[in-house]
Amino acid sequence: MREEPFPSEKIFNLDSQAKELGMGGKLSPESNESLYKKRMQKRKDIQAERLQIRKTKKGLLIVFTGNGKGKTTAALGMTLRTIGHGYKVAIIQFIKGGWTTGEEKALKNFSSNISWHSLGEGFTWETQDRIRDAKLVQEAWGLAKEYIKNESYKLIILDEINIATKLGYLDSEEIITFLKTLNNRKNHIVLTGRGASDSIIDYADLVTEMKLIKHPFKEQGIKAQKCVEF
Image 1 (cartoon, helix red, strand yellow):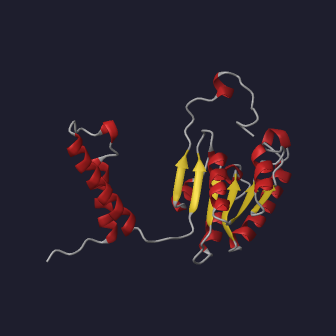
Image 2: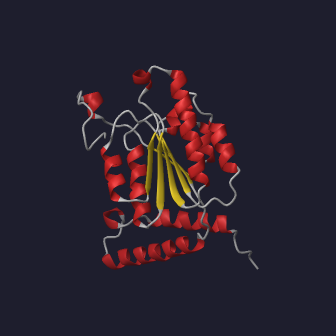
Image 3: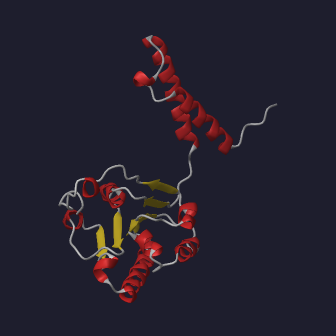
């Protein structure tokens, strides 16, 4: 009797079948609608099995990095989703803090489930003080650890923490070591900022890299504007 494949093998096989069947629409080769319907029904059945076999839940480490715009924006989208489900969110901003953003004002007014801390004082060329910058990063990291250990918070966003590690103000290994000490963590942690370290990327559960294709600041000399950058 043939052995039932391990779940990981079965997941791989189902994912491969789903990819082969494709996403449908005009991308599918069938000119006959009856054949197309059969393909999509098979795709639906496989999708149901793909969802059924994935049963594990855990607190995720999520990284938004890359040179493209949208890292903090993606994290804030998760914030809206989380408070929409009635959970609490903590947002700790590293580096940022020298200006007030539209999202900060909106979210603070929108929900009492938001704890927002802007603990930086701006970009390095604005602060011009590495000693104070490093001190502020360490203070922000200390606060972040308290929120991460607080089980009443479902989502913790550490905005621009990747920049803090890239600048040498916080060691990536310290972040990883701390997270490894937390057994059965249920909350989700989001790290944003360009230049995420290889060790953070390797340890994370979900990593998205925003790719810069065009930006009006670079190509057109357009200044940062409300509603777009802040």
